[in-house]
Length: 452
Ligand code: 0X9
Ligand code: ZN
Ligand code: ZN
Image (cartoon, rainbow, N blue to C red; front, side, top):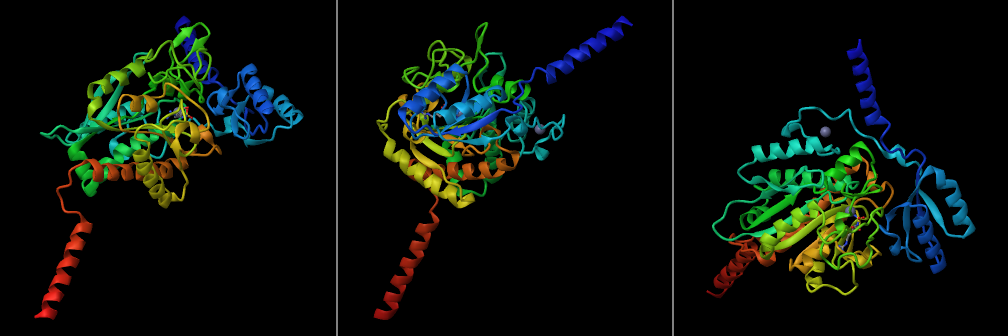
């Protein structure tokens, strides 16, 4: 009998754990607010601070400026009062998301215990155990081209892996580094890295550019860096952003994209550990950051490009985030990115903005991985903000995973094409030069016939 009671008790605790402890967003709204004057902007800053509101755009209240859109999640308890205050201050606003909870579906039905690579569904979001499993399968089934390597561990001691994708070579290879899942709630980023790996494996044989790239370049792909945070968004709090480092009894989490050694914590970052943009105790204080830094330090002179994937906003951001001064290779970077966005637009007619981070995203940041990559000498460094523009924000519906990943793949492939043209040896005669040759011989031939 006691055993029975104990089991009931345990079961109850379990049920409680998975249901009641989850943060609920019932009735929370996301408002799109556009302060017109500096007074109104100041008012907004104070309000977000005072009420500890979850800013979606910009990521920290410093970035709130007149004329710029602010996207902010307001808890049900404050919605009414917030709207009254905004009306009182004559600050224009719209309801962007009417009920945040309604957008959250912890898709459980579609998830099978055992998944095989053949049936892996790239158009849904996957919990971490499935992603770990997927990584193993990729490693096993594609061992000719792909190796899974250990990058380091998270704060909660989970292993972080990356894939090295490329053919063995006698010559020294260049590296293109890509990562996803810096910010926990940006699920579509994590979906993209998986999609992209799948895409490379499916197309590399038929795609001449990719074939050439994989001979001379190793792609280093980190499918998800902030694993602890990601798990937390599945189990406890869907809109968590940071890692899960415990700083004191009341404070958890460092913003990994403020933790790098690039004008660390000077602007657009906070020293307050309860802030969403907390920069940590020092540059690379976090194990996730350390893991990346130690890999990159070893190979940095070989790295040609660094691409990091976030959401949302639909833009490709170039360094820097802490100053409006363009970086050394700004023009070359712009060239590649402009080509990428125009190709991208052809895919699903979706517009992406391109330019210096702080100018395009409209707030400053410091300590980002994108800026750090530039400062250690990586020539091409891009921060992608994937879909959407705020309609669903971080809760991008699964129907949009496919188009998002397709257009982003197009953008990345276009950049690879650019790298291929500019930095790689091309032994095979290209199609255009072959056509030119044929044309030229025809002209010579005709000339010969006509003059003899
Ligand atoms: O604020 C960030 O960390 C990124 N935006 S997000 O909404 N995904 O959090 C943008 C960082 C871009 N900064 C630089 N490239 N400097
Ligand atoms: Zn699944
Ligand atoms: Zn992000």
